[in-house]
Length: 203
Image (tube, one colour):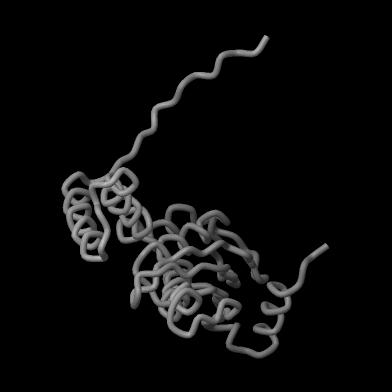
């Protein structure tokens, strides 16, 4: 016998005043672009965009350092820890168009480790803001270095930028790679080991 599925209630939590203010602005923008904001397909678009933008930039309300400190543990392990292929979604601050890709993060503990899920959360906390890829890479590295004081941190981000693909130069297959290192990863041997680990598929 198939059980009847319970209906669900969609719960959205957004700042009402901010949503209304953003929606009013987006209504003007749509009208200035030559569209009829009162037609059926666009009638609720200003509010939808207002909510979407709040979600896409919700990293401003997160404290990445506290995210890491909430799950730190004492451990003697001093070998490289790598979390790779972390999905990245961010918003270019120059054109307010998305850029997206993957982040690869590693650190070598110095008495402290962090819960593995916290690394992607820190990436997301910085990515969900108005960003440039270069600064995003450095912010992730600096946050991990400050929280854990490890022997070294490595961050590499590979991303595609819609501001290059949809407009401007319109190069659809271009990928931008940025990297940032501290401590042991400044040594060629350690850095090569990290690059090898994130580049290869482990069987």
